[in-house]
Image (cartoon, one colour):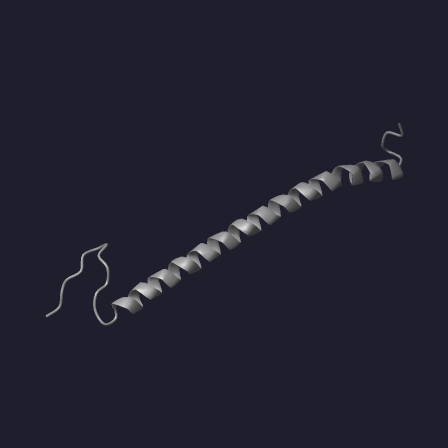
Length: 72
């Protein structure tokens, strides 16, 4: 005789532990993917800040070299 399971109940039976292990593995994989995506976004934000900080002096230097900028 099989026992019916409701949503949210723990898996009981010969394959219950395997089902639980797969669910835990999937959650770990999802967390890892989310953390990797957040890390990539952080790196992109830092790269954007770094390039923005470098772009202004380069633009001014190029303008001076081309004779179109302030020579103060």
